[in-house]
Amino acid sequence: MNPPDLAELRARVLEANRRVHARENARYLTRHPEQTNAFQKRILKRTVRAVGRELPAGARVLDLGCGTGYLSLPFLERGCRVTGVDLSPEMLEALDARIPEACRDRIRTVEADAESFLAEEAETYDAVLLSALLHHLVEVAPVVRRACARLKPGGLFLVFFEPLKQAVASPGRFAWHRALARMDEGLYRGVMRLRRVPLFDDEYEESDYQRRFGGIDPGSLAATLEDEGLTVLEVEKYSARRFAGFAFLGTRLLRTPNTFNLLARKNDS
Ligand SMILES: C[S@@+](CC[C@H](N)C(=O)[O-])C[C@H]1O[C@@H](n2cnc3c(N)ncnc32)[C@H](O)[C@@H]1O
Image (cartoon, rainbow, N blue to C red; front, side):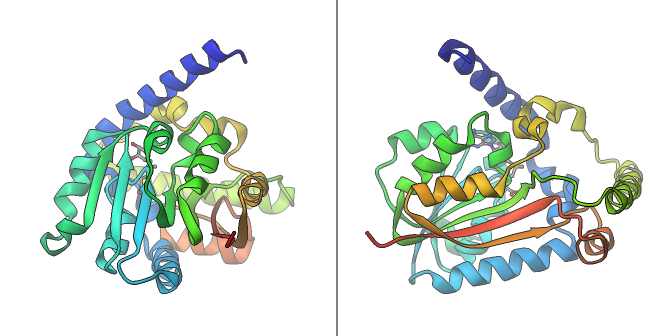
C-alpha cells in the first residue's frame, strides 16, 4: 500500500472509531459484559494485582485507549498516577464521571489518537497499559514501538483483552466452540433487548480493523517487544464470552481461547 492510501485508511479507521465509541459512551461496559462478568473480573483483578505489586509507590502509568477506565481506575485506586489517552471525547467523559474525588489529582486524561500522542509525549512511565486497543489500529507495530520508548528501564508493558489470532487446532472442538458462541450471543441479545440497551455491532466492522485478519498474533507482538528491548514474562490465553459460564466452559473444557493478555518488562539498559 502506498503512503497516501495508508494515510487515508488510517484516517477512515480513526473516524470509524470516533463514531462507534461516541455511541458506546457511558454504556460501554453495560454493552460489553464479556469484560465485566465474574470470569473476566477474576482475570482483571489478578492481573491488576500482579502488575501493581511490581510497581513503585506512586508509579506513573500510561493507559492507551483507556475508554471508560477499565484499567485506569483500578490502577488509580492502587495509588498510581495515571495518564489516560483516548480518541473519543464521549468515552473520556464517561471515565471522568467515574473518577473518585479523592483520586482526581492523580489522573490526567488526553483526547488523542494513541500514535499521535506517543509521537509528542516526552514523559516516561513505570507501566504502559493497552486494553482492547490494538485490534482497532491499522498498524500495530509502530504504536507498540513508540509505547515501548515511553517505558522506563524495568517498566512493565501490559496488553490486555485482545482478540487472539490463531490456527484452528481441532475442528471438532472448534465446532463446539462455535455452538457455544452462538448460544452465548443469542442469550446476550435477548438480555440486551429486555434491558432496552441498543446494540450497534454492525458499525464495528471498520473500527475493529485487525479482526479482518483474525485478531492479534501474540507471537509477532512478542517479537516486536523483544526487538524493542523487552522480555516477555507471560502470555495468558482464554475464552472471553458475554456470560461467565460460557467463558469458563470455553477456557477450561473446550480449551478454545479467543482472547489473550501479554505482560513484558523493559530490560535494564
Ligand atoms: C474496545 S474499547 C476499550 C476501552 C478500555 N481500554 C477497556 O478495556 O474497556 C477501545 C478504546 O480505544 C479507543 N481507541 C480506538 N482507536 C484509538 C486510537 N487510535 N487512539 C486512541 N484511542 C483509540 C476507543 O475510543 C475506545 O475507547
